[in-house]
Length: 444
Image (cartoon, rainbow, N blue to C red; front, side, top):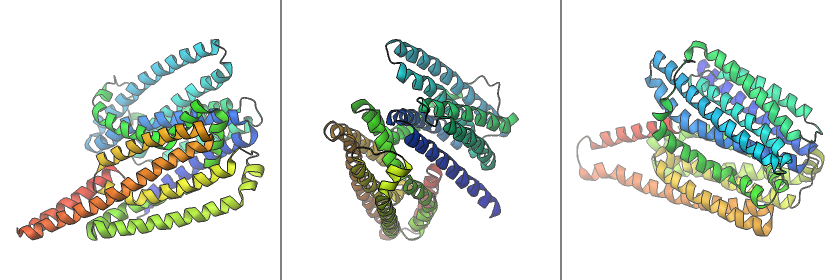
């Protein structure tokens, strides 16, 4: 029990540390810099999140499946080969991006170029750090990750201090994050030592391309559903609108952290319920969790609403246009999000991944289209209205799919009994247990 407590305890502390540091960086830019500088930071941060998601899904997902099956020598070679492949691609893409940004700076885009020049190493350094971070987590070394991340946070917060009242605050924070990521990544690489073949010729990325492509596709769709509106807002409105959307959303982020934590603990419980109680009763319990999470979110939203003047004017030092309406819309959206997550577990545990991917894709497209139309007519709050439309569509599809799974599960359970074949029920129960175990492994 103690080793598991240390393992998960370090992971929880690490996630809380990184979340707090990102919150502090965002709050520093909101309070002490212009909306434009904060908007720049949000776009750079979201670009980094997209690319690290691609890396984690394209490389991380196939690697975590293969690692338990490899010998120590094979594992060493695989980790080194993927690192070499990724480094080649990163260097090439980084040089191309620098050339493009340099060309843009010639055409009177120097203000944007300063941030973009800082954003390129920021993204590359984040990819560097996240690769070794992911490998160490796969090898169950969360303590080493925690120490490296603590050093990263220290450098990032130091950069935030330097950025106070600076006209290029976003670039300073991005550079500080880049330095912290490189130093943190080097520390994690040294911890791996001889467990990675640093001289590998590469080439293993081709072998995981097929699995990685489908995993990465899901990651892109999910990013578009949750963060794509920022890019649409930047193209349709301006950076001030991006800043107002991000700042008002930042207030609700504790709800997101709570939901993610509950979801991790709820997954194994839901698996047990599906196996022992059946899909119908499991769904009823998951719906109960949805109602509980919605109540907690509403309570938190009520407290935030009463303190909104203090939060915006005293804490953030900002008074965004449509700020109250933005806050109300984000509250509604987060209520829908926390209600959607628990019932979705039933579909995951029943291994209906294609249906979930299709559902997310449809809702992502609907959300982005509605956000674009909404922003053209209503400004920044039109973006959230579009996301809410997509989220409502997702919730409805999840409810329908979950109910279908209940009916299918009950028909499957009834078939052996009607057929009267000895031993069929035992075989069916074993198959269901195996399916649930595989679903948990695919979606921990």
